[in-house]
Amino acid sequence: MAETPLAFEIATFVVLALFFIVDLFIIGRRPHVPSTKECVQHIAFFVVMALIFGGCIWYFAGSKPAIEFYSGWLTEYSLSIDNLFVFVIIMANFAVPKQIQKYVLSVGITIALIFRGCFILIGAALVSRFTWVFFIFGAFLIYTAVKLVLGGDDDEEYQENGIIRTLRKVIRITDEYDGEKLRTTRNGMRYWTPMLIVFLTIGTTDVMFAFDSIPAIFGLTKDPFLVFTSNVFALLGLQQLYFLLGALLDKLVYLPVGLSIVLGFIGVKLVMEALHGNTLPFINGGHGVHWVPEVPTWLSLAVIVVAIGGAALASVVKMRAVEGSKAE
Image (tube, rainbow, N blue to C red):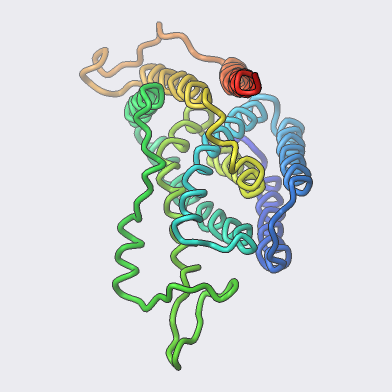
């Protein structure tokens, strides 16, 4: 199912690996609270890099996989903004010092990418062997879209997952941080610091979000390489977005509507693709339903851009109207 040359994929993974090594062990070792200027510069850098990467895919593999990457990247980036709500709550719950929050996010996002990589491999194996899984993916995305519109999302009520609760029972963990250290000594005994729990919390919580985003992107491309790199570029600028928009997230009032349109559209698209490649005996005698129209790649990109861009613009207009009425 790969649509890009193997040499290009290997070069991409090498460059990304080097970036994460530098980010974690060089940049991350300088704890500080990023300024607004620094956040904007980093976000702009990662956006430009994603656009350039998509251009490279276009050059080496053609327009179709490039448009699939752009569609997947925009979808993942939009869905990742929801992660920020939970990240804010996690940082507050564990009282993470602001000076090390950037480093915590870097490590947490790296762990999340490893988990997502495993999730993507499993998803790719399912998609390649069982086309009927698209019915499940599609139905789940449509359900999620409806839940978003109805306000059934309870992300703000964060609770520790089972992995974290079990970990607390089997190892010794202090209540105090010791800089960026994972291990510390108290009264002659070795303890884990809360950093370990925070890292795992951010990484495993992000996987919960992947249950929405991974099926969504498989509705846009079947290439595991494009699925993974879309996730990487979406998550790369997330830590800067955290510091830039942390206090403004609740102002994006129409973002759930935009996300619901995107998820609903991709969900319907997945069901339509499942009908095309149908093998279930109780649907059309086990044959594909070929009268169902195919959704072109460019239309997917257009719907994503219009839905997310429209939601962001409407949120800005709403926010200014509210501020204007307060000023009066």
